[in-house]
Image (cartoon, rainbow over all chains, first blue to last red; front, side, top):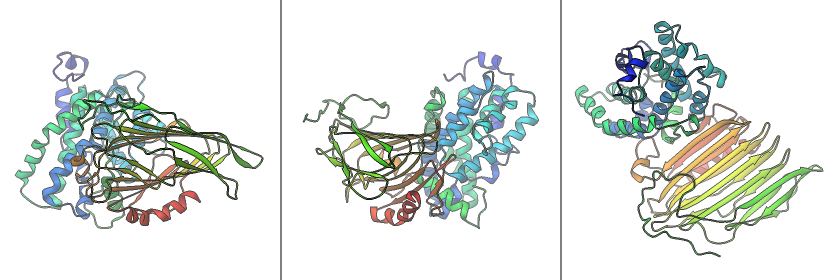
Length: 241
Length: 262
């Protein structure tokens, strides 16, 4: 399933796969990711200390980020299919995201990515098909992992590249926010991400092994949901979520 | 009464890959509660005692039928596989009460399962209260709840999961919940609390050992706003309180429960 080293993968895509993997993981991408903290701001408000940030990254990689990575892989496959239908993965992800503020945050990131996808590959069926996601969950725009999967399909990413981009971005979002919320040594935070490599790779393997939306991981992190709700109701905040 | 089966050699605490139908469990007879509506009231159609629970009708005024679950024998021990099947017919109203709650005992290397399968037909209503589901030190238990709601059906459900008896860190629990509404997935959640180190990570449970939940499924009641409220993507609300002690989570959830059953 991990088709990363498969020489045929590039042939199936448009040759932009490897570059696309870097693009999608780059915080400089103009999609609004810098305004998000992966709920770290809510966690810090609830008392999370600087030295607990690596444990927070690990908690996410074992729970919610795993669900997102697997959803992105399912969306990538849907984006390669004809006709394209993101409805099942969007609905499964929505049922696994009980927190309304977290669904809203994911939809807002999805919106930025959709704008990018439409500018980059306007005629690609994987991008044009994004309307099928909204149709499955009225009132809820395509969620971030769904659009990432669509972009992955349009750019020719492999499943493992797509999953890793989601997981890396999750960890980097936390560390970048940590530098604003608990100012410290920026070089030290790089170590947190490198130290998460084993958890990231385990989650990549789990994500590519998911066969269908019904098998999408659903491991919840109850405190993250609670912190996200507290954060959404707070009036003093740096980050959207 | 069959003796609990402990599978020799199954002493590893890590069952990360076990599926829903595992070895090492002795399938018991399910407890069945089927009720229907007729003549302006709800009446029992099938009440069958299973290996672990005996359903009994409790008389009380009002249109709803109250059914109380009484323990047949001590559960959950290693190898126990408790099953509860509930069906509420069109327009019927069931109040299901489990007054004693459940204790999963130290399984000494074995494991146990508790599974509930709830279906509500069109316009059916059900309230369901479980005071506590306690996972003792050394227990390894899978809790699976499947709820299927037809159009217009409403379930108010209160559960309290407790890791360990007082002073214990608690055993391994995986609680899987799958709720569908009119055939569409409304809530899918795996509270995977098997690995004590993982569940104590910041963001999962932190220092909490009690997870209290009130769910209103099939409707969106007003109820308390605030950080304990989770508005689902479909018609449903989940209030969840993490605490050290049951009375602390109850304090948060009592108001939500009143809203859910209203």
